[in-house]
Amino acid sequence: MHIRLLQGAAIAPHIDDLARLRLSVFREFPYLYDGTLDYEARYLATYAESSDSLFVLALEGEQVVGVSTGLPMADETEAFQRPFRERGWDPERIFYFGESVLLPEFRGTGLGVRFFAEREAYARRLGRFDFCAFCAVERPADHPRRPPGYQPLNAFWGRRGYRHHPELRTEFHWRDLDEASESAKPMSFWIKELAP
Picture 1 (cartoon, one colour):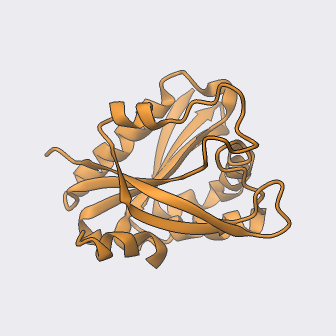
Picture 2 (cartoon, rainbow, N blue to C red; picture 1 turned 90 degrees about the vertical axis):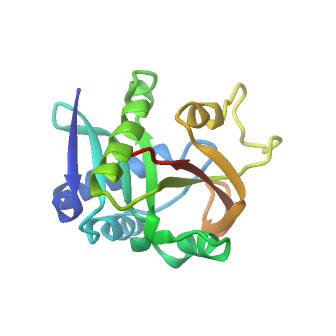
């Protein structure tokens, strides 16, 4: 297992692999995402177009088994920026974490911690960010597709120093595995102040 850090357009050769990985992992609860390779490639292109984006790849041999992404919040879409602007936060001072996805057989090996550490260190090196932030989907505790014994990642995020800001909310539309069409999904943000 090794980690490779790539920025901006350098990710282009891996976009198809990353799209397939996202589709596989995001089918799981709580996302239950039923997406397409075309949409995923367009989504990842947003990151590839940002010269200050970061891709943290976890590779087993040459196979991508996990990825974690980040980019300046100012390079994200309006849907991500709006909740911050409305609450008086400056998107120019925030580095946004897109996702961390990892195949199940590689979980519990410390890669999740490494993904956060690499993105935070990168944001510090860029030298213009005061905060790191990400958002997570909110699903009700009694959701019918919630697996028995499911544990949300809130405690893991808290141990990394992130605090939930439920007042910072947005919504995104996608089709769940059991839906005929897309529906709005509530999302809220977690934030950590970057120490110098």
